[in-house]
Image (cartoon, rainbow, N blue to C red; front, side, top):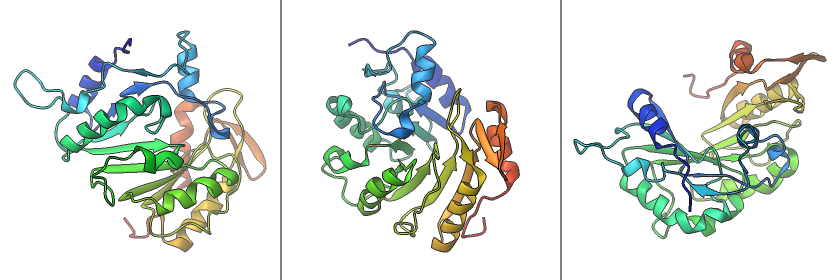
Length: 259
């Protein structure tokens, strides 16, 4: 199978940044409303690439790749953002996942983080020695609307994962997460939808999530506004370069530990 040639880019990231991207396969299939304006599909369309075609990349073995001197290309202590141009639990990747887990197992000195919309496949996709979870693996579960929250969060809450993040991005409506929020989650991250012709996101929805997190003692992070932001009934178009900045200016992040 043809492999996307991404390794050189990721090697440079590994040398210079505190984190590195590891997109070991590329391509996905839309399965829920949050996928409607997927950034991977938008990016691929610029190059005439079919995003529904799932392929291994040339960076597949990045975590265990070594330099000429013998050391790892990805140094110890890095956070590895994993599979951000696909889904780690995608059915198309079943034949490659065992090897992926083996590489993660070999690098307990790295912190691997990935986000999934397929938490329902979790128990069918973990290795035999997973137990109660691995210390070096953090998983984020996306819940973009109430229906997905009600479907995914009970599964996510009960899954044996040591580090869990609830991802409300793109946030498509006001959510009631009170039935599931608790100290089983490390944090909740929320953000709007980016791109063109996207759906609106209301500041009041973020404030509601923040209060729910405060009540449950869960860390809350307002990541970004999205491109179509509503505040006090006024609609704003926020350019991509300002979306994170404006969220930070809102100053509504919450940490129960006061950090």
